[in-house]
Length: 333
Length: 205
Image (cartoon, rainbow over all chains, first blue to last red; front, side):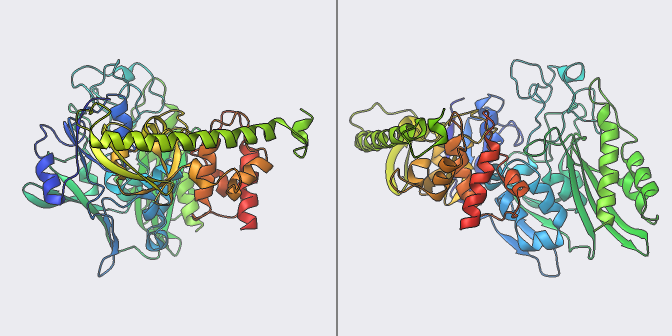
């Protein structure tokens, strides 16, 4: 592993000041925050991440889950995935979030991984993880061998000629459907970013994955007041039954009145270069009768812009069926 | 093979168990030895300092270990290489197999994806601290009774995971246990017996 200086910042201000010395934004930067370590330490062992300073933010008091006055939740960036998934309020009112987290990784990793870290989870694209290969995300301008190579698990939506890497997160798919807000503290003060604006499409700059600037620290995530009584489902399809990344997943938040869909929030995982909120599917569902025909139309709309590669065309139909089935499961709740 | 089916007779398993006590005893001795060695390191007398080394105190199985350690050292390598607690195994070293599972403040984590320096002051439990050959943890006894291993390499990670699972939200059926144990890979495929061992402990608790 690359040699680095290990620092335990005394407080949040010290952490931000130290991180602001980085020459680039958080991911891939020469100064890195260390939270759960489940992505960062793995990638440091592979020399994919080679920070010269590592700022251990585990001691910072960012690990509270609070119910906000007037509804909604405030989730600290250092809350562990397992604590969030098993929180009684989350399980009751934001069940899609609990379901998504519990279908990701393993129990050990969920005990380590944090909310802030999950937002910054990096792709599992094999070319990104192998420094012997070219990768525009890791080394801008070096090329994307995935486009002509092994791309079975890679993205269909939001791809560019520079990068087709899938965002691997399950938690983020649920947060997209729940319209969360990401709260960031930086050298210029605090700012809030709507979840859909937090992750960036690869375009010509696949090395830039989020809006974070040097020094920016995610402090917490908020959820709006729950839409009650909504039906919530996270369905994940993968190559094995557990402990595997999604080939396709769907987060669904629905309300149905008199057989008609009155509210729909839809996001897809495993198929996008970022957690994929589907406005097309939501439009196709809202105001329509809750039945298989409507569900299939929403799925067609959600994947309408899909761009398949040599090995992943099967994921288009898989993702459509995943969303259709998730909607059926939601209706049955 | 006949002996394996009759644990009351002298068997390969009992031989291994007895052998296990001897190994545990030698590890204990090595640990004591290491503490002396560590004290010298801290005093700066015996061992050349590692550039950028960080002083930390790790509380492992109820014993404090004051050490200076290269901040790149994972908790796993620190346990095995620095403190000679080799019961915790290195499988993939990338968070994919679960062989390195230990408890930190009572929760199971992967020691390969944690740095030792992150755990200054935390309560760490390894397989060496879960039970003793004379007074095994109920999960260790159940693994033995159910023959929940073959080669044994993943076993300490499986047992650390399974013993932590007892305190986690988990449905009553086998499927729930399998889901919560999916982070521990067994190449020999002892899964059926592992689930049976865990369920027996859960039902008798």
